[in-house]
Image (cartoon, rainbow, N blue to C red):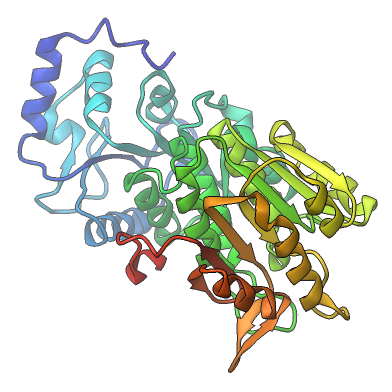
Length: 405
């Protein structure tokens, strides 16, 4: 379907579009903020439009083409902004498709330009507030779309995540900052190597939702360690992930919700498997239910984690240790026993992430014994906060502190 217009767009049409865009630098973002039918229920308010354009220009090198088919009610004067009808004239559908070929992202409301993107290769960010995406659109098989929806829809947003790429905002209407954040992430290209819409969704879950503060602890930075981990996982062709301790309740981001994150990533890759081990079989069934969207890449095992790892034969690319709670006796010794049992399964590029492990004049929490033991085996800490991420390799040269922002 994404090649619908390929054979119909002529070289002359492409040349015409190239002429229009010749004096616009950087990647091209197509913005469609205002509809015609039901425009009050669909459109981005005028004051938000102005703020959004300013944020996009200030925080990126993009140029913006505002798709309007009448005289714009909002006009932002900039050498990097053009308005479709005043600046380019009337376009037919094939010329518009040719414009989509030259763009990097469409950011738009529930209207024709947004729906047209599904018939091209252009990634799209849909902005919805009063109409829900699944009522007025079809999911995109290539997972190049993400949709912004109000948090008030609750469970519906969760049920639609896999197919529609639902990204939640807090209020009834998204702010300019809300829209700009996700548009800029998509414009920058896939951070985790996934299709554009799935990548934007996982970024939302990792960089926004995983910042939830763990109970009784002031540190809220799992987003940073998970972010580094998922960027590093691109190097594995068929990632084999082993996790001790699985999801125990719905949307429990304060506990990391790691089983869900790994499943979302692996399903987006269309490769790999997560094996999650938990002593409590009821926890396994809970995780199975809440992670059912990713079931093709999920294997839940009800067993003692040390016993399972001791008997496992398959290599492990990513090992995530988060089983015995840090308020339970022997949690440090248990985590050490887990890494020692799994150590023979770790390859030269393998990664180990340990949850509930912080520094306070010495290592505290689950990894208090496991982290020093790994360091003695020649491992190095890549990043740490409320979690510790370790690798046998030195920190890659292209992974600077600025990338953790």
